[in-house]
Image 1 (cartoon, rainbow, N blue to C red):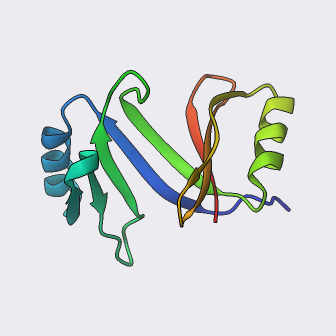
Image 2: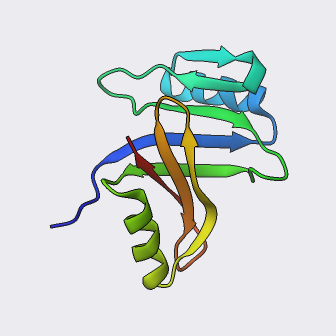
Length: 117
C-alpha cells in the first residue's frame, strides 16, 4: 500500500491569469476568491471541486498545471522520488500556518506537487 493519498490541490499558472480565471470559471463553474497581493485566485471548493488556485506565470513559476498529492513525510517522499529517477524542481518549503510543499519532476519532467499538512 502506498503512503500517497488523493490529490490535495491543483495549481494553475498562466501567462494571462485574468483570462485563465475567466476560462475556468466559465468551463467548470468555479467560484474564485482573488488574493490581490499575490495575484492569485483561490478556487472555492465544494463537493465536486478540488481546492486550488490560478496565479501568474513568472521566472520562478512556469506556465502549466501542478497537481499536489498529500504525503505523510515530505522529505521521505522527495528522497523516494529522487531514488526513482525524479528530480527536485522546488525544494521543500513551509507555507506558514498551513503545511509544507515541494515540486518534483517525474521521469518525463512533468511537475508534480507534494504536500504535507
